[in-house]
Picture: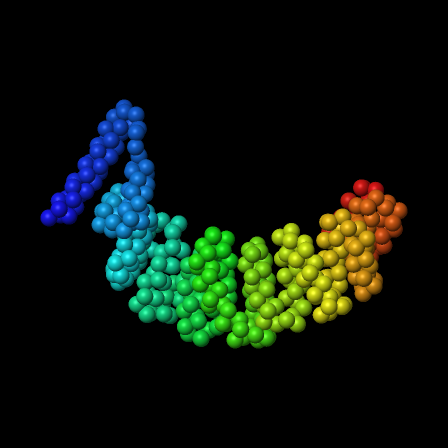
Length: 359
């Protein structure tokens, strides 16, 4: 009896809150000459915030009431639908949650499409409709490539369906995202899934190659930490993968992690002593660190392999400029310009001309 009275008391308080807020809106209508105190947008946000507070406290009836009022106030916004669906999911009523989320997906508000698709995937996964769940997770990821929940859940479904290569990529990406978010428990869960996969597929060159491609794509999309994770596992699966070490060195260089980059380029050269690009990158890093003798040593090794490469002459000249060796710099710039003109490289010629001005 006491619980019933308490519920009705909360219900009456909410009714008073809503009526008061609505009265404020009506009484402060600018058309009526009043000063605006609260807008529908502010009231909508208040409903959502209070609803989330009750949701976190597991007081689902109160939360549902507030989310419903938010939906009634602004029926074209997705947040209220998503939160109402979350209540249904928490109550394990996944079929109902799907109906609500499908309605949300048809709204003009497209700002939360990734969340809607991810939640649809979760509901379908709970209902053991795995292909449909994977489809929705994929839609979510296509909109938001760093949505950790969608990546992890899709990865687990791939693992369940013996698509180990796809599972490994998704779980690795998810791990990076959760680590950046400081979610240590989920990171540990990812590690527990990754360890047996990497152990089972050690020295699998096909999988190593796939991870190499994925890592390169992540780098192109400026997701350096993701690229590092993928490339490191690629190397783990293919320890003689010189291209993996080289690309990882490039990512580390881009991230200003010079010690790690130098180590990767050194390993690249051990596997392939004729990798000119690795020597050139080492030269650039040593130059950045003002270790000019080491920079010149690396660049001259590159020059011994490609004597007609104008970029190497240019890079050597720039090291001499940084070290105030103007005579040496002028000599190498001259050779660089002649070769660049012969190869018809206008961008390099422009950089050479700019370097001449510093002399």
